Length: 365
Image (cartoon, rainbow, N blue to C red; front, side, top):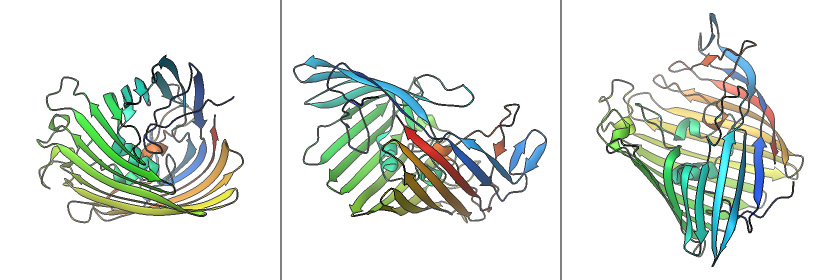
């Protein structure tokens, strides 16, 4: 299929597709993988009356398809749209359940309304070397403690504005409506600078106190960047998350006392022709005693063409005695089912160190 020219609204950080004429493009990615997960937890995998420590199965790694396009309105204005949906094996994925919006673009910038990732989430995606695979950085950077909804969301009822590029600098703002919940709105801001081999971004996000059990607004600040040096690509991220779940102090929650967390990570990729070796390390330091988690991931990619790539990944999580994080969440998250289509439940016990191995192929269209 012949591709139409796509203009990114915020480069690699938040993409708002625009085509020159009234064209419609079908696009997507299909990314099946065969996985082995080991929870290192007795009874960590359950399916009916059966239990075990490990499980094998297939994942689709956030496979997706969509249609997008635009209409030239004259006077430098363009109407644009996108409808994007998950590809699932159980047939339950709803149409338009991913980034789906309509908008208008011109010399003033771009405005879209609908469903879209927050700018803070998009910044994290731009520096993740294992996005949608095991070892995805969202296993730690999302901060889903104390009933928190996390900081890597796709907001279902939002409006966003992207400024024009000014000397490599852009600003993105997003507002998520409260849906009738008092103080339940969300807003997310991002400033990004991209020039040549360098990208750096700073994001701030606020979740209204009405979204949580606690009485405080949840906030997050995320700084991330990348730099290419010849065949090397270096990435890094640091963030501070506060009032998680709406709780200001540890101990205010009936769940785990983790009202604040600092997360940081870095990684690198070295490309040799059609092959690439990549690795990244992330550590989360939530409030409370012995709650830290450290994730390490290493992988090998082989590119067959512009559209087809194969990969092998290994990821390991080291949890302190009060932590129970895994390496197969984020965009990789999959439902492993038996022949009766019965899904397994996969959990990690406190202080256990899970790991996973995955091999698969990504086909873009």
